[in-house]
Structures are given as structure tokens and as C-alpha cells.
Length: 232
Image 1: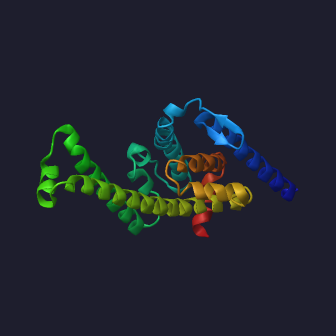
Image 2: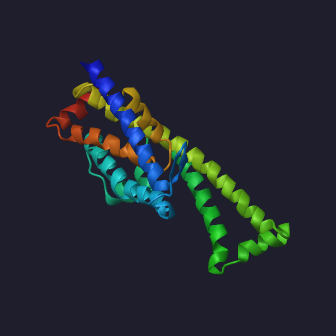
Image 3: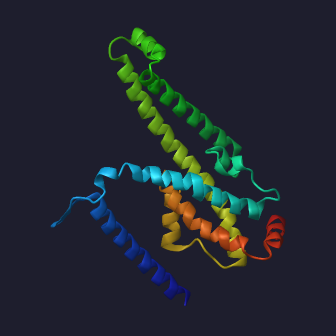
């Protein structure tokens, strides 16, 4: 029975991915074999990552954290714990060292953004200093390398952030597997794990795992589960 259910889930997942690819093809546009599409919303695609990011920060992560605090904490979360970016996630991550590394990377990235943005609002002190030291083209070179460094730091943050979510996810799934049956196996679970390491797409993985958290928080014996889990 379980094997048949697993096969159905795998087939359904494959069909869903194919349908998603087809939809994206017609929305984005392009050519594939003898098919072509102009793209219905091609000129508005820049807004898709922004929408995912807003959903992630304003709904997905707060809901995820509310469930986590209800399962594993005796005190309710504050608005800062739920809605302030970076701080909200760091409050549930297990490694202090990793969170400090990520915070350091974010500070560097924000610093680079500010330095490169200042000339656009009329503040050219830093760019004049860079130009005076490096000569003609130094500002453009500086901007180029700060962008490269920022991308590299974002990759590091994505990897560290994903690894910390894996630790949190393990606690949640251990609780589910103990009281509601085994979850977190198979193709869908593996796909969800991969999404946790991809910026913006992480929103989909969080939304998928929110369903697991909601199932756990609806149980009448959540308090008993929490106590027993800590005793194990």
C-alpha cells in the first residue's frame, strides 16, 4: 500500500513539474523544438522574484516560525521574532557561529550597496576618493568587483541558511515521524531540500513544510510531545 502511494506521489510530482514547465514556457515565451511562444507576461517577469520574496517574508517565514515556537518554545514569539528579516530566522537557527558568519556577510553586502548607491543620490565623497586613488575607471572597476564579491557572499549565505533550515526541519520531521508517521522521504522531500538552498525559491519549500507544522500544532497533546521529545 505504501509503495503504491509512493509511486502515485512520484508520478503526480512528475506530471506537476511537466505542467509547471509548460505554463512557464507560455508565460515567459521562447522556442522549444517546433513550438514557440511570445510570452504572456514576459515584460513583467522582473516582478516575479519580488512577489516570491514578499510572500516569503510577510507570510511564509512568519507562519513557519509561529508553528516552530508553538512546538518547541514555552514563550510566544514577538513581532521582531516573526517579521524582522535575518533576525527572525537567526532566532531559531542552532549554530551561533554560522549565524554570526551570515550576519557578517550581510553587513558587507549592505555596505557595498550603500557605497555604490550614494552617487545616485548626490553623495560622491567615496566615489571621488576611489577615483582619486585609482584614477580613471577606478569607480567602475570598484563597482564591478563589489558586485562579484556580493554575489559570492550571497552564495555562501544561501548555503549556510539552507543548512540551518535543515537542522530546524529535522527537529520538525522527527516530531512528525514519532507521532504521525514517517515523512520526509522520496522525490518530493528531496526536491524540497534542494529548494531550501536556493534564494527566493526557498519560499516554496517553507510553504510545503508549513503544512507539516500545522498538522503537529493541531494535535491535542502538543505539550506532551514537547516534553517527551526533550526527554529523549
